[in-house]
Length: 357
Ligand SMILES: *Cc1c(COP(=O)(O)O)cnc(C)c1O
Image 1 (cartoon, rainbow, N blue to C red):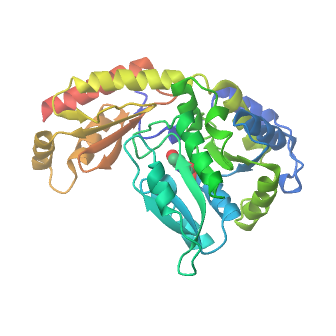
Image 2: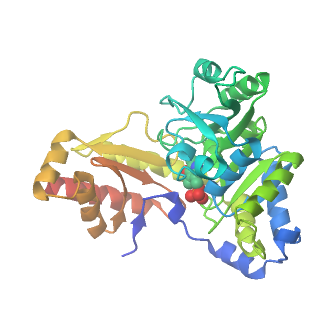
């Protein structure tokens, strides 16, 4: 039985076309700027997001870190959401390695930061305060259920930032999901930013890598910082080749992942003991909880393991792996290795496990 792995879209394996392109990739020393495949990927990426230049980096985390370090000096402040990936899940890198202070504003349910709240958080020119330098947004917003920020909102924050002489960075790990879900080109969500990163290794299915994009001047500086962080890679065109296939062939099909996430949510909603988040799914993520009663039933069966952990273990016996996001909470992510039959198997698995109590 093949496994249905819904834990994340990071589990996606390179496609046969990617492996083929990787085997044939022309490469050179990228630290010298001589890898033609990386150069091609970077140009392609920059064009798609409406920026001048791109920089291939090993991970989304490094893309965000390089961007923050390029925009900010030590002691400067970045305004970001309290549910931002950069704040929660990047090991505090911006402060640990960059000495960059963060001001966390509450993320609204739609993934936004209130414009008034951003404006109110900008520091006065006063020696008691850090210098506000940067605003960082996330699109789609992972911790807000994979919700997509709109082009109008992106533009409003960009205008606000530039009116106050601040920079705007976008963590667009799943930028193309946001674009496809709204039927707009990615550049409509990213051209107004001062920097944007997106992951090749999530729904786009490449094995490794992200691209950081911005102006020529910004990328020039980012290039040095990437080296400083140990992210200068050599014949990494082998990896970039898969990224090119990802950008050329894997963007439009994200709509299928969104459709399957909806089918999954519609099925799960019918199963007693499960409670889906209102609005879910926005893109390729379904968030749900065990009801309190179902959680207690599960907990009674097994001391020590959380109710969601127990259900996940039972689902694994049906060949279905799900993400546990809290003691009663799950995250299920669709991607190109999940097909319609897998959705049916997942629903059957949940049905069986919940009925067994
Ligand atoms: C996955 C992710 C990242 C980091 O990407 P890695 O390649 O795992 O380091 C950054 N931001 C968001 C929103 C993500 O989902």
